[in-house]
Image (cartoon, rainbow, N blue to C red; front, side):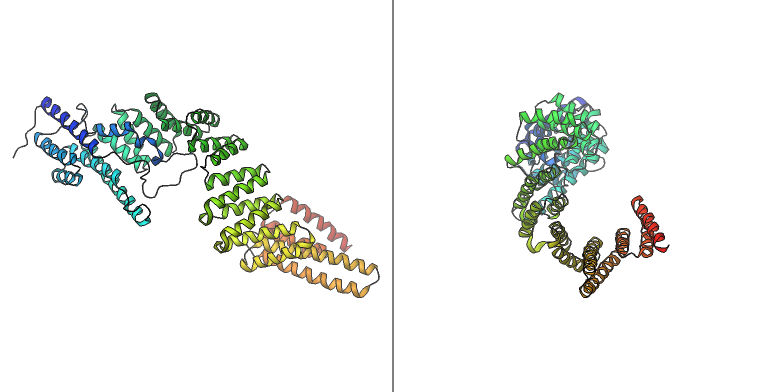
Length: 536
């Protein structure tokens, strides 16, 4: 049976009426997905950046109306339909008005062929896109149910994108299809594909605030901040009320390292909407880049006052306070991280903070933090983290002076039992026994001067035993990759204490072959002179 085609004017008028009916049907069914529905495998974005699901535009009336309008044909750049195809679409419209999306899809799939109108493919895609917004987990508290819903949403978006692609392959100027394809790609976080599709919409004369805004967002996600800025400015020009585009513009300034402009725009936007958490974080990041960490700290403190702190923001606040030598405030922040996240938190960052406090000789604060770490994480600490804490404890004990050095050595011996490849612990042990041996050497000389030969002999025996222990620990470290050169230098220093200059020279030369250093070469030259003077 031949296909009858209406004359162009008549066909276009009917297509327009049909589009209006479809649009009204869509509004009666459902809006696109809300901002919180999410998609599987959402990536973690740096603090201060909006994710696509945080965009308010998905919930806005403007976006929903624009999506509904996508059913209305623009006859200059859209495909026409035959009388028979129009009848099918009218039938589909009735299904959609009754919210029978499955039946509508079934009817369209019966008619979809390579030669059929691209409007069929487009309508199929729109229905899949609508369905994505209606999918919810049966039980929001059940992870399995949530995951199943996310997978269903992802499939719906994939099906929508596939059908939109077919539509634009059939009709290269099908602007509505290009528009919705770009939007779906943004929802799918396929920004490298969204940008070309949205750009095509602009080229076809369909650039509006939503298209420019999503284009700016896509360019930002693919690290093209200059193009993102241009797109956001166009979006703001066409729609100065949508806050997302202004936030995107601030983000584009940051990504271009225009930190002063980012700070200024964030300040203006925060005056309008002071509860926008991403803006506080973005401005804080810009302050850090401008080397104004205490201003960044003010932002993080403001977030805390708002009850919007996260483990990440509090950890960064603690890091700032450590760098500014505000150790008590730093520990307070890290304590809050552990209170906020509890056993869910990764202890590595607070352990690193404890190391930093110890390195800065803030022993009381480090001790307070370590005690809390051990309370919160208890038996959940892995061997590596437990070893890190032992190292910190050892360093703290060493800082207490001679009275605590033996306790430090006990901790270090425990460390090398847990981790025999800890070269640093072996070196520290070697230094400990070397210092004790040197003190015993001085004691022996004193006793000899006091004419106490028996006691002097005992002291010399203890000295030799301690030096032997030190040598053993240095030799262990010399076998561990990354510690060989430092261990050889420490070992050489031990030999010098015993006036074994030739052995010291041999060790220093080995160290220089592994890791040449000017200061070690100077030391080697000095020992060579001592060795020569000893032989003459």
